[in-house]
Structures are given as C-alpha cells and as structure tokens.
Image (cartoon, one colour):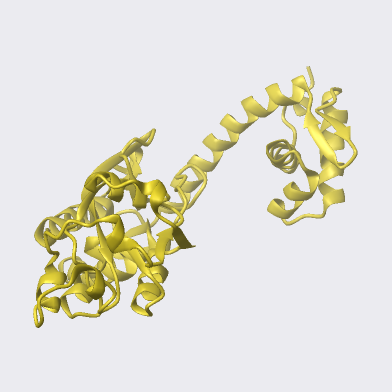
Length: 315
C-alpha cells in the first residue's frame, strides 16, 4: 500500500472537510480564504487520489456520498484532535501568567471590567485577554482558555462553576410606571430603586412597549409565570442582541425591559432607572467554564478564585 495515498495533504483534507460541513464549495472557500474553483479542484484531487467520489454534484449544491459522509465523520474527529494539540502548544509558552477569557459583552462592561483592577493589584504578573462572545464557546476550535457564560450548567467536557443565579428585574425610565403603580409622592426613587413588593397586573403593562433580548426569548414568559399572569396577553416589542443596548433603549424612554438585576444596580440606585416590582428568579445562571485539561493551570486558578470571591462579596 502506498502510504502517501493514505496521508493526503492537509490542504486537501481541509478543503474536503469544510465543503462537507457546509455542503457548499462557495462557503468552504469563504471560510478557507480561497476561491471557489480552488476548493473544487482540491476536492477533485482528493477524490482522484482515493479513487472514490466524495460528493454528488446537483447543480450548485453538493451532497456527500455514503463514502464522503463516513470519511467526514472520521476526519472531523482527527482534525479536532490536531486543533486541540495545536492550541495547547500555542498556549504552552505563556501558561501560568496569561489567560484568554470570553465573556458576555454586558457582563464584561458592567460588572467585570470595573473590578478587574483588583485582580491586577493581587496578581501583578497576570495578563487577561478579554473577548466578547454572545454565542456558545467551542474550546476545541477557538483560541480561548475560559469563558463566562449564561445557561443551565449542562455543557459536555468542560468544568463549570456557578457564579450567580440570575434575578430578572423589570426596568423602566423614571416615571415609566408612575401612572400604573401610583407610588406615594416623594418615595419613588427610594422604593423603586430597591425593588418594591408591588404585585404586577396585566393592566400595569398595558400601553407599555415590552423590549426583549434576543438570546433570552423566554424572559417575559418566565416573569409572567412567576406572578400568575397570562403571557399570551402581552404585546412584545423590539428585541436587542445586547443587554446593554436594551438598557440604553429603556433609559431613552423607548420601552420597559427585563434584565439581570446585577447589571443595573448603579442605574437603579442613582435613579436613572426605576422598578416597582421585586426581582424574579430566572431559569438561568452565570457560569465560569473551561476545559478540564487546564483545571490546574496557575493563571486559570488565580482568575477563578478571584472571580468567585468577587461574586460572593457582591451578593
């Protein structure tokens, strides 16, 4: 057996894997920064080398053959192992002092960054590279060491530390709820800043624009369920990709919204935002996650311990 035939070049394998994953030479070419014709030629070269058709061509659409699907399954696992090994080598030179952390954008801006100076005061040699992520983090393909994410805590092949059980608070601009809740004169900022025990009704929400965060479509349903309200009776308004954008829209008087309480503490305390209702527990929590393989890394350990201490002190 010719061993060269058993070990095609990486460029051929990457072209095939990306094409099979996207079922498109064009999208594979965009991912690999090549032309569509170059990717197509590389796949044809691989098919000629193997003596087996890997795709059925149906106009502009390509569909893996049975052999192509089987090859893709085995090849994906091998490429993932290669990428993981490469990530470990790339990061080995800076292990112990350097950490690449992904964080939710609003959590990073509103909670993490204002406190990060205390981490550097305690660990002057530590370097934290922060990356914003809304979507799920994949440690097998991204050059990241850890992430702060929100969810239910069930992620495969990662260590997860629960940081904060999310509490949703309904926020509005000053005066947004005045006609609905009729607070006593002179008591608005004090009682609404800390969260009153007033029980909401559908009538209190009538006429208000209910803003949403696209990554948490069930927020209003959960909030209504907590108070025994019928969510189908609500007319939902615009959605925002970032929680920070929703907060800005609320402060601008565009509508009212549900956000994690910890992200609007300052605005509630200084009166820029108000809330007549008590916070409601959501089904989600914030977690600090990372691959098991770096659990004992010195930089990771320092950041994890500091993060957990800061969260404990702020609750």
